[in-house]
Structure formats: C-alpha cells, structure tokens
Image 1 (cartoon, helix red, strand yellow):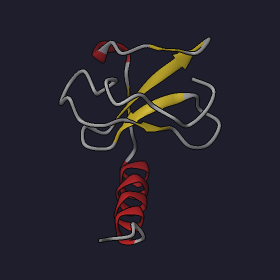
Image 2 (image 1 turned 30 degrees about the vertical axis):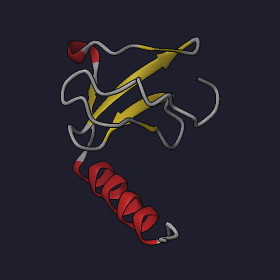
Image 3 (image 1 turned 60 degrees about the vertical axis):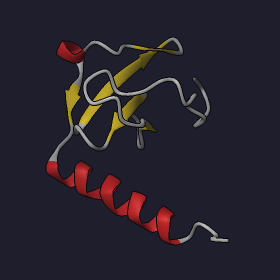
Length: 77
C-alpha cells in the first residue's frame, strides 16, 4: 500500500465505509465517517479497532472539506 489506491473491498471495520489514504507523515488508512486512523506497517494495514487512532477534530474537518471539494469537482453526465 505504498500508493494512494485503496481497493474497494477494503472498508472500515467499524462502519463499513470507504477508507482514504492518510495525509502527512503518518502511514495510515483513514475512515472520515468514524474519525479513525488505521496504521499501515510494511504495507499491511492494521484494521483492529482497539489499535486505531482517533482523529483530532481539525483532522476530521480537513477530511470532510477535502471530500466535499472532490465531489464538487467530479464531472457529471
């Protein structure tokens, strides 16, 4: 998982929502809906809820803003 492509079958273990690649220095998969970050180590995501990091309020807002921006720039038929 060295690139930002996340397979569709890999979903949040808590809410089953889509995951996004983490930003910044952390190597993690993020569930913006739950506000959780799942660490990726040696290319393998740790999808255990008890070991997930809770995103800060600022991080949650940033992911929500990025999602709304990407939806507004998607071409429509």
